[in-house]
Every structure is written in structure tokens, then in C-alpha cells.
Amino acid sequence: MDPGAGPFKTFTAQREFESLQSSCLHTVFSHRSSKLKMLPATFKLCAGISYRHMRNMTGLRKNAMVAIHHELYKLAGPGPSNWISQVHRRNSLLSSQIKEEGYNEEEMSYLKQGEDALQKAIRILSEQDGWTTETVAANGDKVLSKVLPHVGKVFKLEVMLEQHPDDLYKELVGNMEQMGEWNPNVKEVKILQKIGQDTMITHEVSAETPGNVVGPRDFVSVRCAKRRGSTCFLAGMSTQHPKMPEQRGVVRAENGPTCIVMKPCAEDPNKTKFTWLLSIDLKGWIPKTIINKVLAQTQVDFASHLRKRMANNVSVEMSPTW
Image (cartoon, rainbow, N blue to C red):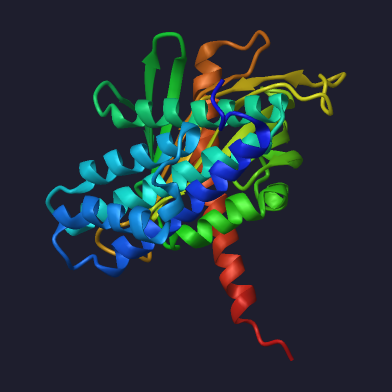
């Protein structure tokens, strides 16, 4: 049996791994103007001098050191901006993997669902071919659609917003439960459970469409909110949660993968290129032509309501307090 496999030794190894990783990265960033080929040597310096007792380590601790060493060799490529971003990304990933060990089986399942929704949505949005224009508003807001195998018809809203992505992220993620106050298509959004920094389970109730063409629907969703550099993501998909079984008199619809992507505009970083991927099954006996029209209009309306909300927020901030 591996002597480092016991619970206490595994924990100790992880702590040493985190300490070694932090020291190594600190040294790397302190000498980022040096030649990149010195990265593996820097690692050896950190591991050999600062942590002499680790030279003869075995088990998990040895594997951790070897893994970091290999990764730093990979980073020794051209261009400092490239390897800096990779170090940040890998460091974040390694840290999150260690922290996730504290979650139970149910929480880990939700984390995986959220991450899967994000990855599926990104793959769909990365495919630029095959999109058909559904509608274009007078202000340039555009909704496109595409039929995908095993998913069905998906819709994509593309708009330009005057606000910075951070402000929009704060409104849509930080103030998520307030959406019913400014979006008339939504009755209520309630957070049922939060898991870590990025994942939450929500219950949303939609409002009836004009003329009750589509009655009220509700959704239970796992949502994954992440930042990658200056780009913000809010992805989601349908799930189940013990706190919210199906409600009498309301049709339980399904969605996902869905994703909102907020990226600074290339021409003006204070503005946002806003993309919303929508995949939804409203259930019930509603003709597809009506569903397609309702969903496309819902996205256009959402952009309009969001603009008004953000404008009102600015007005409130600028109002005198006396």
C-alpha cells in the first residue's frame, strides 16, 4: 500500500503541494522578464532549496511535483502573455480540484451538470455555420436559430449593450432573484441552493404570454457562472431538486444547454457584446411555429428590458442622496 494514501497523509501531501505550487508560481511571476526556458530550472530551485525535505517524497506528493514540473516545461513557449495566462488557468484548475473534495455526491453531481452545460453551450456557439436569421430589430438586435441533432432548435440573441460586462454580470448573477422586478416575462426567480462560488440551483416561474397563448411554465435549473479573463459566462440546464417538485397547475418545462456570454466590445471595452444561447422545451401541445415565434420575441424583449434596467440603475446611482 502506498504510504501516502492514508487520509491524514493525503491531506498533508495536498497542503505541501499547495505550498510548493504557490512558492513556485510566485518565483515564476517575479522573474517573468527572464527567459522562459528558465521555468523548469526555477521549479527545481523552489522544490530543491525551499523544500529540501521533499526530495525523497513518495506517493501523491511525488506525483504532484512531477506533474508541476511537466506542466512548466510545456509553458516554456514563445510569448510571455501566453504562458502567463496558462499558469493562471492551470493554477485555478488545480486549486478548484482540491477544494471540490469537500463536496458530497449530490453537490458534485450538480457541479458536473453545470460544467457540462457550459461546455456544450460553448461548443454550439463556436460553430458559426448553419445559423438562420429569425428576426432583426430596428436597433440591430438579432435572433438567429439552428437545428442540432439530439438538441433540437436553438436560438441565439446577439446584441451590443452600453454597459461594461462586470456591471451586467453583477445584475444577472449577483441580483438574479430580482429579475422578476424588471423582466415582465418572469414572475419569480428563487435560488434553492448554492454550491461553491460558481454553481447554484434555481427555480424560475415564467409569466403568461399575451392572450395566454403560452401559459405559465416553471423550470428547475442548475446554473454555472464563470469568468474567463474579461469574458463572463452564465450557463445552465434543467435538473431536479428535492426542494422543488413539480407544481400543480404549472407545466414543468425544460431548458438547456443555455448560456449568456458577455464580452467587452473590441472597439469600446466599456461596452459589451452580449450573446444568449437559448434551448428550451416548453412541453404541452403548442404548435412549433408558435413556439419559435414566442422564443425569438422573448429574447428580443429581454434585451430591451435589460437595457431599461441598467439605465435605471445608472439613474439611481447618479441621483442626489439629500
